[in-house]
Image (cartoon, rainbow, N blue to C red):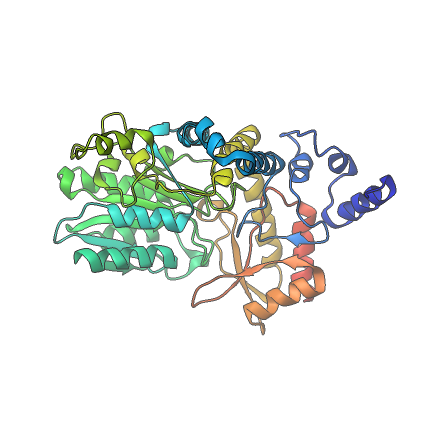
Length: 437
């Protein structure tokens, strides 16, 4: 049993490690979205660790944990009747879409629900309509999920797949260098331009807005069938950056919700411009109730789609999911909405800038990620002289209980991701630990 004395000891230990005030710890139930200490107190992170890898797989804030537990408890008691009350998940998913739309400043009918970034990319690239001589264009910097989704699509359709390099040196990359590389890479046959908002390999944040302006100018001279679709893997910007998908100017934004958004594990979204959705066909049957009508009546749906059913809803895979997690996604968006996109962006960028500034002063460290917030977000990648990245990450944990990660690419770097849950004191502690490791 937790006594008052043991609670206070635990709280004191937490303050010593994290720098958060006891008042915030003791009043975790009273959530103040204007207080970073109160925000941190909503999470059940190990207080003995300094965690700079929370972006890999989210810790759930209290409202999300409670929503998951509530749905799970009611499903365990009587799954059939609880599903019925959720209108075979239709009403629950509408609530999730509405919460997502409010956060993204978008329309609910523009959002499909998935289980991860990888699932979203697979559905998007697997379903995009392509003519015989179409070209799929991506970059050498993208992650396996993008490369493999496009490779499989090219194998199935005979489309040509190309990769271009956007910058020679991540640390000194510029907007002009990146946009020029895209401009030189697009050909008359290019139909899909697959980009990643923030590269998990280097921490470089692409100037998606400038790239979108370029694509728009190219599409002005093309027919609807020949236009280039700008498709963005947004997972390492989603939940950090304040820009909405429409402000970015892309056609599609795909993201898991269980990284920087700290949403339920196993959730994701695809956002698409209303007219762009017409260029994609569903792969997995949806369980949206409106889709069952034609089937029950023994007729095929119209080629243009089922009246009243948005293409985004049709793209949401059916089947039985981990409903308690998907339905709790509404609480994740609401939690983040209360804090504010702009505040989270400012906080995360300030911590990342502080971290890069501190690391840049260490002679043994070579930073990979650009210093500018224009071309970087929350990820900070670097090398340490004389150390293998995996060995160094292990050393940080063993010596200082700092949780870091290694970039999962052929070129491997130490990677840290300060989030809204971290503090300036923790950043300084990490810099000191890197210096002495």
